[in-house]
Amino acid sequence: MDALIEIKGLNVGYDGRTVLHDVNLNIGERDFLGIIGPNGGGKTTLVRCILGLLTPQSGQIIFHPRRSRPKGQGLTIGYLPQYTSIDRKFPISVQEVILSGLAGVKGAMARFTQEDRHLAQQVAQRMGLSGLEHRPIGALSGGQLQRTLLGRAVISDPEVIILDEPSTYLDRHFEVQLYQLLADLNQQCAIVLVSHDIGTVLRQVKSIACVNGTLDYHSDTGITAEWLERKFQCPIDLLGHGDLPHRVLGRHSHHSDEADNKE
Image 1: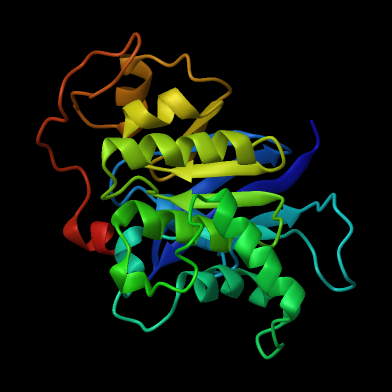
Image 2 (image 1 turned 135 degrees about the horizontal axis):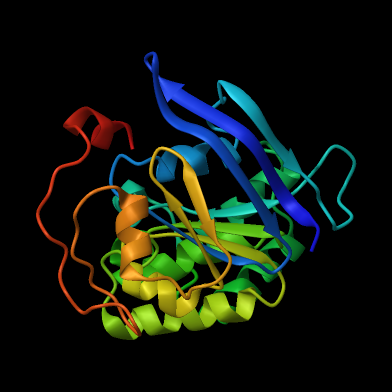
């Protein structure tokens, strides 16, 4: 399958220290990739590079859009940030958050049309948010806010959606709903899911990338505890499912606090 995103020999660092080295990865149409790895290993750094928020030291990230877009627009990427990065006191409604996902397509200063608002209403309905369009985000439950942010990520009809720890602070009921939505969205676009929850990742995704200073790719989810321990490069007990042992993560320190802060 031809790649939508092609990463070749990527090297990234901060303050004279290399965080990621020689990263190679292809993300194809309707891929569902899980990105795992220890804190400080470079997961967020990789996502920031893909989003264009961080310039690599060397290497390439090449985008190959498939859909026809207005002149000057390339591959469209939807992004669901970590829950903790959202200011819930900001005075903005569900509909306004979803509409903001069109800013990258329309331009930051463009006015939203009645057609745009109708589209936002349709997206809200798809996200199970009908009747909440004008509710401020501070009055939403954790699950409702995550679905609002997912609506913002998908309203532009992206070819790739990147989700950073999407199940944080969700109870089991809303987590099930979220992954049902993602399975549906995966019929139209590729999904990249970043998570520390190995068990959840293995249940949802089609392939795995372990990011820990570099990237090790596994083309399916048939991985072993030994493979994960080797890629994490530290002695860990794993909380897993299927053939993986059902144990909790052991206490260990592999990366410095400085590295964790960078990640």
